[in-house]
Length: 294
Image 1 (cartoon, rainbow, N blue to C red):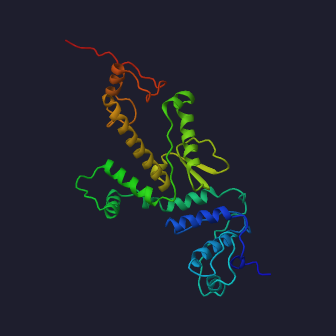
Image 2: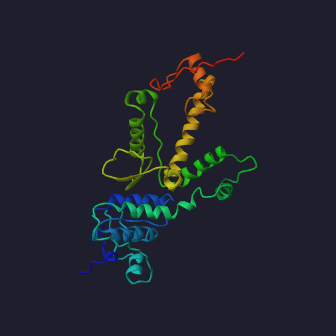
């Protein structure tokens, strides 16, 4: 009996993962490298060969059987692979014996991500050139804000998946800002169509999401591509939201002040009062008295 992965015609236990990868392929979002982590013998290579066969045999009469997750033994793609006529490179990473094989190798994943960190937001000129090439924009009036929203367009187009989740002021007042942050993170994760196998958090605190491994990274937006991309989406969606609020409440100047209370903003609160979009538990101190010298 031949137990080599390339000869396993049926796929067991990885059907959902298989469908996620095929969905990425159909939407032209399949990454050029895939890291599958797990114990030896659970079917990582078999899964890889099934993904490859489904893609290669899509135009054949005897194509991959997606309903039963089975490779047709007579399809040409299988014969090319098993006869070594078509070479498939599956790089294997050895696992240290002293590490629990049931735990995702967090550091290994992080090291892999770190290798590509310099490719993202490394040099301003490089970013401007890349975006200019993709969007064909005039950069004579280039600004950080323009760059931020241009990156938003690229991230939404190129990302494997993304989700933005809002928490309103009433909920923040009820459960506090820290718990609201965790709630927003979990809400965004729940909204993803493709569930992550590992989570990087920008900051030093997080409440575990389901059984997924995670790591908190202080100032992570300057170290990892995915955190930097998430930060850009968060800021641009916030800015768009604040512009809409400004159209309803122009007296607060939310089109320019999108974060914490400036002296101008506090003056406007003292003059006009808080709206439903203000956090009632946010402490607004009265402006200090000024001593006038004659």
